[in-house]
Length: 326
Image 1 (tube, one colour):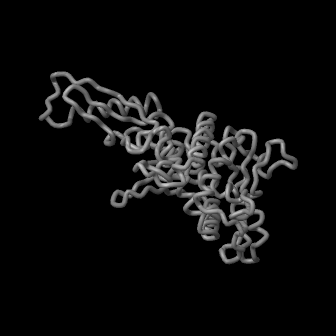
Image 2: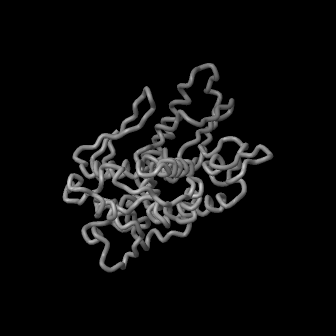
Image 3: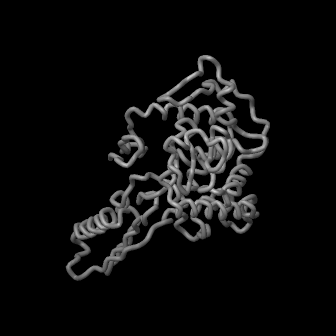
C-alpha cells in the first residue's frame, strides 16, 4: 500500500505469516543516522527501551498514535455484533489508529521519550551535541548535508548517574508533558532542551523550511524537519490531556500497589482507555470507535451465508473511506 502523502516515498506492507508491519522507502539516507542514534540510546541505558515501549503502547491504546495510512477497510472484520434484526459495526472514527488522521508516529513518540530522558537531572541519555563531542575520527559523518556525527560504540558513553526506576520515569514523563507548551516551543534533541520560538540565536534549521505547527518536534539530524508536522491542535491538546490524566493516575495508590480487591492495577490499568475501569470488559481496544447499526429486513436469511453482510460492510467502508476520509 503506497503512502503518497509521506515526506519521502514509502510503501507499507504487512507480512501475513507473522503479522509484522513494515515499510520500504527509497533514498532516505537520513533515516540511517536516526536509526543508529536510537540504537545507541537504547544500548546506553537499560531503562530506555522499557520506557519507550510503554509510551508507544500507551499512546496506541489512547488512540494517539498509529499508522497514518490505515483506513476502515482493514477494520471491518473486527468488532461486529449480529442479531436477527440488525448488524452493528464498530468502525474507527477519524484520528483513530485504524482510521488514519493526525496521529503521532512511533518515531515521534520514541523521540519524545528520549528527549524526556535528556532533560532529567542528572540526564539518563546525553544530547546529540554532547554525543558529537564524544565522537572519534571514525565517527564523523555527514549525510545528505546534515551532521550525523556521534559515537557508534555505546562503550564510548559514560553510564548515567541517574538512579530513578523505570516506573518513576514513566510517571514523571506524563507529569512533564501534562502542561507542555507544544505550539510555543520547539523540542530539540540536538540541544537536549525545549527552546521558545523567539530564541536567539534561532534554532538551527528553523529558518530553512521547518514547518511550525501545534506540535513542534525537531528531527535530531534533519533539522528542517518537524517530525510531528502532521499533528493538529486537537490531537496535541488531547495528548496533553491524556498525559494529565495518566499523571494523576500515577500518583494514586492503584498505580504503585496491588489491589486487595482484585481490581486491575499498575501498568495494566494505565494502558487501558481513560475512563474505563478494569474488569468491565473490553479494555481500550474500542477507543475512538463509533457504532453503526444496520436494520435487517425479511430478505435476510440467517442460513443463507454472509453475502448481504459483506455487501453492507463494503458500502459502509466506502462511505467512511471516500466521504468521511477515515
